[in-house]
Image 1 (cartoon, rainbow, N blue to C red):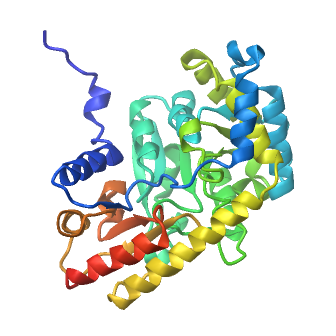
Image 2 (cartoon, helix red, strand yellow; image 1 turned 30 degrees about the vertical axis):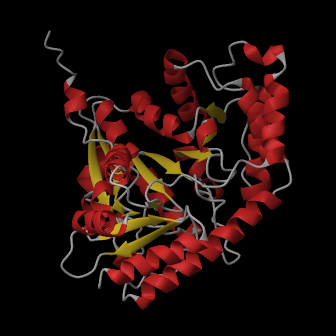
Length: 388
């Protein structure tokens, strides 16, 4: 039989990180010692007190039943309290907070609630691929907002065609940013709120990396600024903050209507996050945050090793203030794909080509700080051996 996949799937490029895994495995099968700085998956274990909370909750038969679609009331209450404590943001846990099976799931499902076929959505480029693909799956048309070094890797709101902005249903922002590691301040968020009001569009803020920051910097939340709760929704995750990528637990906070729309979609598609995982999430958010500080200190040291090593090779990058990514310009004469493939095939180093994050990512590669300092130094030595 000829199984014809839906046209929406034909619009999607191969998923970037799946393709990188395939190429990495091909090289590894040749006996090459791989230093994997590609996918942003923490190399450290989940803190013990979170694991203990999961084990205790999983042993309780009460958690073995279907969870609530919107998440445990207690997890939503703790999330609201954490947002109040961390950002000064007040949110009603019943109407303005929802539990997610990881923030990626929520971001992917959100356009289904508000994008009709043919609607426009403003998405950054370069960016996490899900922003673009989720709009396509919903039948919408992504319109890219280029993030350039000259503008601090922030979208130039004034450069967006007002006619396009008027037609757009939503705009996605992501700070601290993946892949560029750029950060945003409250003044930028104030301009985003004004832009959203002017053009009557929804702001979708991906804030998954606010807790991965260095040198005393505390990234703000979009929801901190006046009027943000009226126009937007923010997605957050426990994945990177607490090394819980495989646990699949996140949350969305924001306008009650937007939370309700997302909840309506989710109720038709999934049955909620496992209660025991939500109990572990409660332990993470309420527990001692020294584990987060320790992780940030470790990543800051790794950042310093890699940035200094790249600088000695003539690859100048600013020290990231947040995330665990280094956004590195390619040497002269290389595309991002060329540079990525040479690093992999000749040095056994896995990176992510900037072009895979969108057209505006061309000319860069992303390094993830997911190996220890010794391996980062070895990666720099291998790079030096290539003679850039």
